[in-house]
Length: 235
Image (cartoon, rainbow, N blue to C red; front, side, top):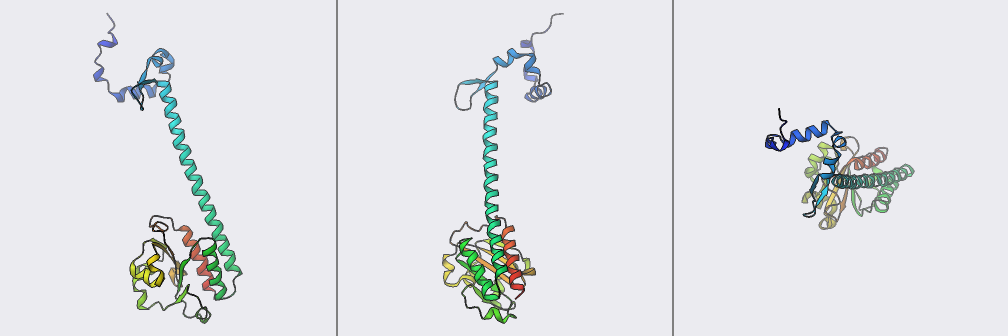
């Protein structure tokens, strides 16, 4: 019986999936049919010319390597940024430990925010009206207010969640926190102070609308809030 010629087979009935599956399950196919590998050519992505399968594999591996290299560089950049933030937060903690009294706590916070974080627009909104020492600190960066004050109504959901918030805050919040500087604030971060924000909040504003975005991680802001909250809590 004559063996059918491969050209006489209905190749249309053989799906691409069947061919791909066969080659995957038989990785030694091209070792047994080296001539086929040499004759195989596929279109080049950047033109009408063709390249061999081996060349295409090399190209694919090179492109994969470039993508992995880019991803690695991205991870390295994020790690370096996180390391720099950790160092700044550590310096803030050291400053607060050395501070004695309300005035020195506020001064330590101001130095850290300005020198390490480049923040010039900020306000500590303190609910600790029971601490006379805080009321004697003369600075535009500290404001004492009762928790029941009507001015805090726009911050109700913030105090309920007691979680940091970043982005473009509401006009009423921005005007209350930053006063005459409100028009310059493009984005802001609100950080709770104390357990369930019971000590107040720390507001940091930026002229850059993208400096604080709703999608950014707030882990480091939470750490800052915990450090400052502890410093205020012991007064």
